Length: 240
Image (cartoon, rainbow, N blue to C red; front, side, top):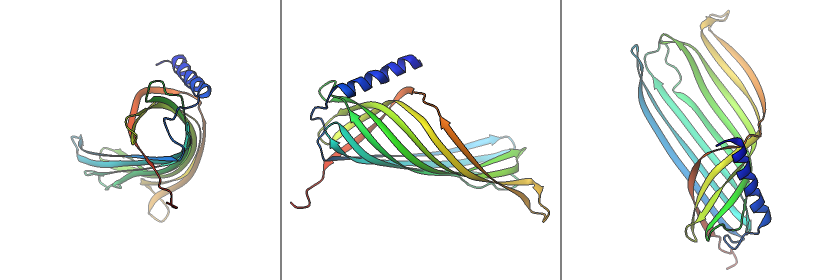
């Protein structure tokens, strides 16, 4: 999908959201929750001189919030991922822990008037903070040459657009079809162990560094629709 066509869709969506007030598709005070879990595992042979690499990982995410207006909701989201691998055949056994992330976000959602009876469009601005720990390695002919560990903290803002189909009073199907992450600030520290160089004490050379990145890229992306279900409930009044 070219950029002009994608921007046209976004502008059309914003126009709909601004022009209409949402019908009673959602109720003020109604809360929702959604989440997901994925797991992966692999067993690969790296090359003729090395044994297999066994790897696994998982990703967990959860979102919850409340409608403050019939066409507006506010909420929070958290996510966590982890990946690990075991590589045999190197002269030095590398770290099995490959990486992990944990993040939290604050978001709002603005809904259009229903296009069909139970189908609405929405836009979702958000701001999030993510911590990531990653271990990378370099090697030559089955010899481990260096390992680097990065600690990274990222603060970013973004906006996405999608559709919501209210299947039942309790369940809805959500699909995101466009997004942009226009701005982010990233900082961190890195620790590298060089197995081919020694310090004056005869130990493997260790290098410590830090980095900072500022990204401003207001590019709208689109592609396949990511789908997920959301569960709605109404909190009981504590006085009842």
